[in-house]
Amino acid sequence: MHHDPLSDVLRSVRLRGAVFYYVSFGDEWAAETPASPDLARALMPGAEHVLAYHLIVRGAGWAATDGEPPVRLAQGDIVMFPRGDGHVISSAPGMHAQEDRSDWRFTTRNDPKPIAVAYHRGVLRPGAAIPAEEAKSVVVCGFIACDLLPFNPLISALPRLLHLESNGLGAWVVHLLDQAVAESRESRAGSAAVLERVSEMVFVDAARRHLESLPSGASGWFAALRDRHVGRAIHLMHEKPAHPWTIDELGREAGLSRSALHERFVELAGQPPMQYLTGWRMQLGAGLLRNSDTKVATIAQEVGYDSEAAFSRAFKRSVGHPPAAWRRKQRVGA
Image (cartoon, rainbow, N blue to C red; front, side, top):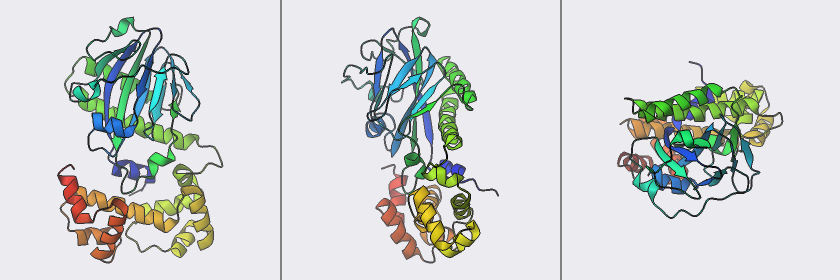
């Protein structure tokens, strides 16, 4: 079977998506979204990481997060905040929403989606939305949860603000998302499940487009995947995670000397090859612990460890709990 490391990681970090808000705006507007920890508490309790994205269905706007220049958004554009930064979207750069002390994100968590919201000098409670036909701008706000532990190289490899223009390669995702939201607003059967899947597709498409648009000389996990030698080494580790890889063997297979592979791997991926292999083995082990009743000793062998004790030590270093305790914690949803 052909192994694609990006697909491997996307599958393993358990993407869970939902489109929550269909937001109507008047002439001047600003809406703020809190950082990942607050979003997780309000919308997806128990999620390790929640990122937000916004699709401009009608009108135009701006998006900004601290430390980054504001970005102009046109109709059909998507802006995403992969690292979970708090941010603002607005009708003009430099605007901020009035402070919102209400708990509407909590109280509407389980309501049918998408929830209609209207902003006018601050947020109005859901249900008080002006008709979308009268709105100057309409934005779909979606949220995606994923795991960070034991190993998720994807999130830190993406920029804090990712602008996906409507004329890009992934324009089909915009149309699909818009259609899914329209279906949900009509309360069609199964529409909530469609929204969740499409929301996940938005993230997958964003990751692919970022990979394809990387400039030469870039660094990070995506650049490592694209590099001829380092990408080959990563491919091999994903293809045969239980193989007793050594840096010498990986170097031979990837076409570099031991020292050259180590140096290039660290330069691009930010960590040595064997550390990457350990992380990926822990991620695979976590999936087996969560999704099966396989004995820990068997899982240890499946991911490349000769003994249960060695696997348990490595796993505890990664997540803070030994395998059996971590499995129990996952099962009770703690």
